[in-house]
Image 1 (tube, rainbow, N blue to C red):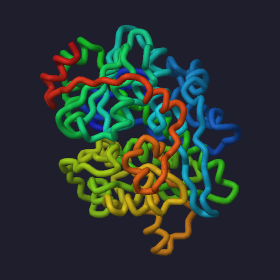
Image 2 (image 1 turned 135 degrees about the vertical axis):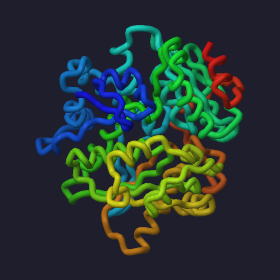
Image 3 (image 1 turned 90 degrees about the horizontal axis):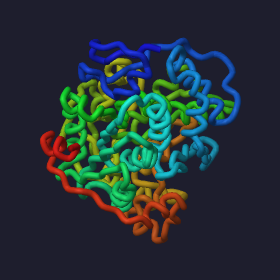
Image 4 (image 1 turned 45 degrees about the vertical axis):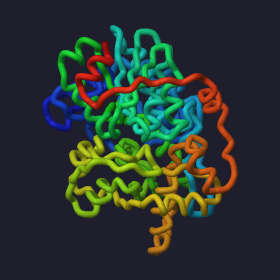
Length: 412
């Protein structure tokens, strides 16, 4: 399948897009509109994932390997936990780094390992969870170096420990700035033909179709599993918009998904854009839901390209830190600050009389945010075994100035 740049300057195969990450014209690769799926969606998670993804990989070099890629990447589940008849949590934190990013990162790594023709550098900016998922997915894979940029002091202590705990072919750099600075540095590196060619750079951020497309699979599985009772709606905590855009693509394929709601923290650029139709990037501010501290979400370019009538595609709301705290205190079970944003937005919808069935995407395990969650709920949060193993390792990260020249030196 051929994919195209949002800026109109490049059309390539899906495999080429996965290998390169970003289009040469600086745009983001987009899949074409596919015929709505009207066939059988039966089976378990992996069977449904394969059914959903297969049309995108038709006539691709990866087509024959897609079944193996799906089995390799999705060796954990995304269960739905219903809290009541009309409200549930889609638990996306059962992977090796306890965050939803594991799904896309592992799928991308499985693809790139089969496409690789020379040594590759995976360059990734992270606001907390992406970096660890990418590091885990590519750790010790031959011919791959992973370079992680994260904003120093703006991720949780356990997130920071994860980022520096891999070593080997993974290098972590704590940037003296915000996530927006990290993201800008990555984009500038990809815009540099010299750096891109010298280090064979590829992206593992949500700008990569290799991460975006597999994120559709858990929305497909959750909506199909709930379909006996009718369609379901999703509330998705979002920062860079990749996770929510994947839900939009899943609905586009004909899955029984009704409403899609974006939940943001005080970085309300997306909420304001959906409400007013005016997109105004702003410097990010630090919040309790740090993985969503994004002032210039990359995937807005995809959203504007595919859904110019944005208010007709999604709705959105934002919450402040005090609301996050209150929601964590009152939640029926421990939740992370990002999931709290989703539950807070759902409460407002319920207060307005919305009676639809909603699943809130629980994007990370609360144990990753123990310093926030445990004081609010007055008890400890058990640490999942995979996270505990990472936290037992030594961890280190190098400081880095927020400039392309500094990044170029770090790549050397």
